[in-house]
Image (cartoon, rainbow, N blue to C red):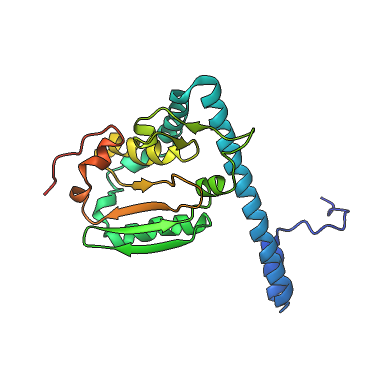
Amino acid sequence: MEPPRSGIDQSSHFAQALEALATGDVEHAADQVARAERQARQLKQYSIRWIAELLSWIGQTEGEDAVEAALRRFGERNLADRADPDNDWWSVPAEVRAKVVARAMLANGAEIEVDEDDEKIVMSFRCGSGGWLIDSGAYQGDDALLTLTEQGPRTFGRDSMWVYCAHCSVNNEMQSVETTGRLTSVEFPPERAGEPCVHHVYRDADDIPEEIYVRIGKTKPASTR
């Protein structure tokens, strides 16, 4: 196969950065890493907006139940491994579980603040996906994304919920209880622009308050002690 005829370098920014480092050209390597980071962020934001637009269209044309159904379909097809007995979330120390969540959020562009007490570790972060949509004004104006207004489990019992953030209730909490019998994630998405998303990592599943289960239409399981 003949090499490309254009003068455009066909390798990725990361590949070019590695090549530059191999030759000692640190300045060019840094430039290529910065370009790669910008490109990855733009692609991520494009994908986030794509998902949110599709969920909005589903809700606007088929109703809010259909949004939940679509999210449930995704969960059934892609998150079934959470119910695997070998993936016992609660067998892992809270500090380790918190690091797993934090790494995922950092990879998503979040900034995280951590606090803790005897019951739980509390992580507050500026979410790089759902939070980014909220803070960027995507739920405002003539072309606003859908805000769910049918109060119930998928809105955490709130009067409203940003459509993109509904995966937090449906996939991360409701389906978790339905497939494993217990909550593995306790999340509080922002209610207004500028607010952080808050994630509680409990040290003991029995310490999760009953009202956390009630808000997603579930019953707290019997104590495992």
